[in-house]
Length: 112
Length: 117
Image (cartoon, rainbow over all chains, first blue to last red):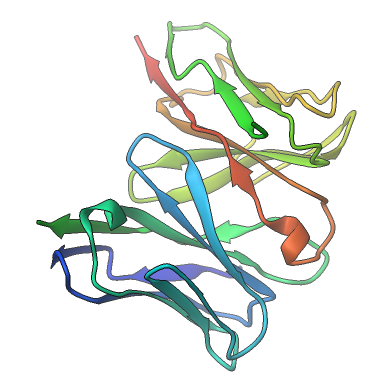
């Protein structure tokens, strides 16, 4: 079965620093979604990637999908305390299914 | 405001008791999902439904039951057969249960935390 691996599992950065979170799949992805979760709350949709080489940005967060569509990265520029939380990637594995698979998440802490 | 409402936010279950978690959406989405989230394990799919009066088991359906009598509502019952129910439960919905990437963006409720007394 297809799995998503996220790295790192956790990350502590100083405010203002840049950081990158990775999401790697064992198989080619049909679609890739990034979500953010505050502890004890629901997931907030951030961005969707579909095409190999695609890149999207929203405010200070940029997500990329590699050409082979097996790895995605989430880059945060000049991190702020408001960026703290758990980042999860979700993937549409393709084929005749609309069930998403999720990575285990990356816990981000931003120190003022 | 459109969105997904889960209630209650916190729920306690006694031994041998069935409890029901509510999920309501006003997004006019066809598909709805229930996930269980445990520390370090990510999200695991319990049940999902693509249309009214139809639903399918996910990866961990044992000990759970659902119904989909209305498009807006997808309640989850945690039965006494679920021996380890303590977890954070998340409900989600998406526009359409097909395979289109954009139409499968899932939007989530705020979650229900279930604990055992």
